[in-house]
Length: 474
Ligand code: LFR
Image (cartoon, rainbow, N blue to C red):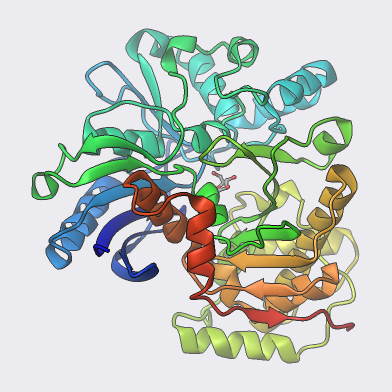
């Protein structure tokens, strides 16, 4: 069997990477060839992504991938959810790309929240709750504030679609990403016309979503990579991370993709809908093959990253991280936890001040140092994960016997143990770049080197050893 090299471009809100996956003898080896920080920037009171900067980093990483792996077969792109580029027929950007934490959607969010009938109708149509970052709210705000955009733009390409276009010259919308927008029909695989109309969005901006694992064609946009195939992988990073889960094929596993956000969910042939699901903010996103991954979004390590930023003593390397986690573990378990659903944590000027303000309001003591903040945040996130598990068990009639965790948080033993303790379930932590693995799995399937996802998981899980955290009473 041939050795195959695939490049995964994996963009997160705080960092991006290009990772080459080498598939040989049914085993996957990852080589990180490029990593770079990412952040949105503000101007005139609004937040935007630096797209030329991202493309520069992607091209640099892909050139390096090709230099180190001259027989590179393919490339796939996944990114964080919901953000998009409006283009004309020639592919020119006609509007700057806002970052999803921009507060511009707040009035729309409130308006929908206050209109119970519309809220329920949109949830029934799309399976996606009313969240500030939804593409629906963002696009509606753009069209309302700058109506001329409907004349200028002919297509809405979501971020991975846009990079696929730059690479291959083909404009498509991929299904996993499309499902995070709050514009896709939850019962089918096409857009929800009623929802597009509700948000006053031109239906012509969107084309029927393609499934993942589709080969789009050869790279045309980067000379050095001519001939390498572009594969539309699950464009949404969370869909990629879920694909990487070494799940028990019989079911019973709850998944957590832990990064900037904690995405807690599972795979299902049917969506979880209704009033209870809406109240629990269950988001019926899609797997690259069109099936469902009902999940809830817990604020995640953003809370910790943003808090640590404010301490001069924040860890900057693995050793310092380990020291901080050890110091935090030695502290007594906090008696009261943060309410991690507090909207004040979304994008505050100071996260530490936002945490202190919540504690003050609840007349609770403030953490004394960096270790105490870390302890409180990890314990609170663990509780958030456990709350999501219970909501799923209640609403989807499932029982989860294990929690599988991948991504940055899988290395944080305080967070993993807190999750096990709060949920009463063993946590199996896999220290792997889940998003890159899922991205590469999709390329291998698209190239027909691996039959399907079930086959990939069965083979891949043989090479993994989890760290298992058993629940303890504290
Ligand atoms: C994680 C993620 C989440 C999505 C959030 C915003 O990186 O993609 O799944 O809800 O970012 O896009």
